[in-house]
Length: 312
Image 1 (tube, rainbow, N blue to C red):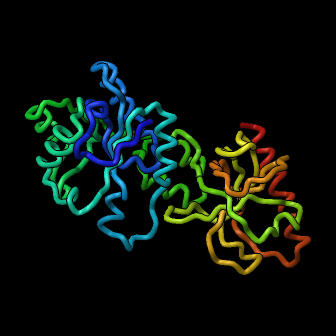
Image 2: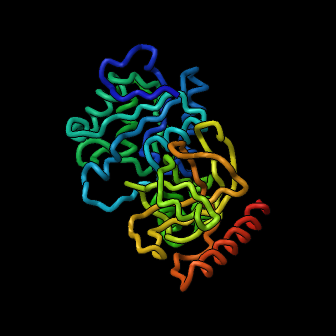
Image 3: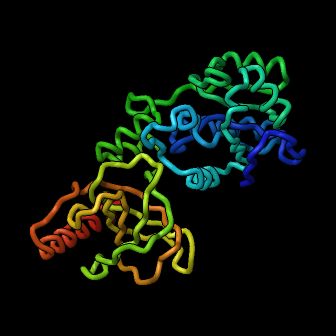
C-alpha cells in the first residue's frame, strides 16, 4: 500500500483513485462496508482502491485535552487497511489550513484538483469542511459539479445496534471483547514494540512480552485470553497466550502496561513488534496475599485461556 501525506502537487501516478473517506478508527464492519463500495467503484472505473483519512484524528485536533479515545494507532490502521487490499492511503495532515477549508473548497482543492479522485464513498453521517458544515448530500452536489462520482453508504447495524467506534469503545471498556469483535469483524488488537520490563514474570516462571500503551482507548483492565502475532524478527508468526492489561497492583505500579505470556514460546522478543488480539476477558486485576497465591492464579488463568483458545 502506498501512503500519500499531501494533496499538494500530487504526482500523476498517485491520482485518480476511487476512495472511501473517513477516520477509520478500528476499521470496523461499517468502515469495511464503505471500503467495499469504493472497491466496486474502483473496479468499474479501472482505478486503484484508496482510503482518504486524516492524522491526527480531527477530534484530537479540536479537543487535544480529550482523554485518549483511539482504538488503534496510525500504523495499526495502515496494517489493517493493507489486509483489506487498499492500494493508496491518503493520510492527510489535519491542521489549521485543512480545518479552515469550506465544504466547497475541500471538494475542489482536496478531492478534485488536489488528488484528482475518480470516485468517493462516504457514510450517511459524513460531515466535512469548516465547522463540519458540509453534508453527504452537499458532497454529492459538488461531485456532479466538479466531475467526480459520489456514493453514500448506508449506516451498518449488527444485532439491531448501529456499528460505531463509540459502541466498540463501550464494549471494550465493559470487558466484552467478543461483542467488540462482532462489530469490528476482527479481534480488537493492541500493537506495539516489546519493551524491557522488571523481568518479574521470568522469575515467577511466566516470562512476558511487555508493551507500553499510550494515546489509545484502553479496554477494561484485567486478564485476557489472547492470540498473538509476532510481526517482526526471527520468531515472526502466530501464537496464543494470556495477557494482563493494567497497572500491576500486586507490585504497586500505576502505569498502564500489557504483559503477554505466550504459550510454549522460547526466544527473545525485545524490540520486536507484536499484535495482541483480545479474545475473552477472564478476570479483573487483583492483589494477592502471597506470591504463591499469585502464581497459582496465573496457572489457573493460563489453563482457562488454553481451553478457550483451543475451541476457536
